[in-house]
Image (cartoon, rainbow, N blue to C red; front, top):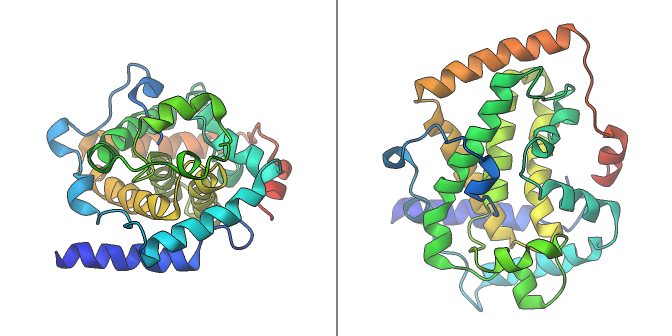
Length: 268
């Protein structure tokens, strides 16, 4: 119970400090990873229901904060940040592999960095399993279901309505990817972590998650990366990816995305 209150305090603090009040610095379906399985066996998957407090109750101060952040985020509709949020919603590969290319300063492709490419796919599968228990248990309604405003991915709304909002699976994997990539490129840590943070914020802009969903997703993403480091296969792929990145940098390969447009959308 003590740990639950601590997690809830962290959730409330970040909710107050972040959101769509200023420049803005799941979801995860198994089908998106194709035939790739995660690193964690079913017995090793983290229990999101045990690790997270319940989502904010109706009428609570925490829910009022969720609603306020949501109202502010609706203002991004039709703007470049809205378009980037729609792009961030895509977790299919190879599209998703380019999400952190600008922050990393290098392209992430199956050809040039096969171990890193596979690592991203496999951890995506792990994130889907890590968040599933709490999602299914709470079955929290998403913002677009409550406020009746459109999301940035209207084609996905029917599927999302059947997938619990708490915690955010996209945020879980985005934050996990950011932490992993920061290990590989510590000299790019600020840019990578900022992009990982913005990836979670995209779910708010998209009108498919509440702030508390996103905060809980970051908690699960960090917990998942900590757990992955105990897996020898993950550690082996991480070291191979480190060598791949060094080789790509030595060749001077650059991101294939429009990094200037991405920076502008993020208010940088």
